[in-house]
Length: 198
Image (cartoon, rainbow, N blue to C red; front, side, top):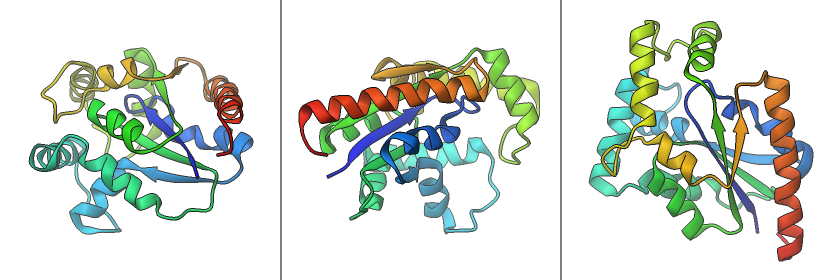
C-alpha cells in the first residue's frame, strides 16, 4: 500500500524540487511526472521538442476525448507494483485529476505551490528550459491562463490549488519552500500513522 502525494502549482513554483524533502520523511519515493506521460504519449523518450502550448493542447485533446481524469488514470497505472511507500504525482494541472487521484488512490494528499507572478516570471527566465516561453508577454499570458477557470478538460491551476490539502508559499527561496514541504510530509506521515499502516 502506498501513500499518494499529488503536487500542483504553476510552472516554476518549485514542484519538481520538492521530492528530496518528501524522501527525507518517506525514504525513496516513486515519482510520476504528468508532463513526462504527455511527452511519452507523443512519441516516447527522447520527447519531441514541443512548446508548452503544444503539449497543453495535446493533453487537452486527450482529456476532451477520454475524460478529464485521463492523465491521472495513466499516472496511477504507471505506478504499478512499486515497493516504495510514497508515490509522488508531480504536475497535476486539471481539477478532475485531483478528484480522480482521491477517488482511486488512498491515502491521498495534495500539496499546492503558490507564488506571485513576478517570482514565477523571474524563475522562468533564469532556469533556462527550452520548453518555457522566452518572451515575457507569452509567459505572462500562459501563467494567467493557467490560473483562470477553464473548460472542464483544460488546465486550471487555480481550481487545483483550491483542492490542495496543504499549500506551500513558493515565494520563498528553494530552501524555505522545501522546509515547508518537509514539515508537510511529516504531517502527512503522522496522519497516515493515525489511520493505520501504509
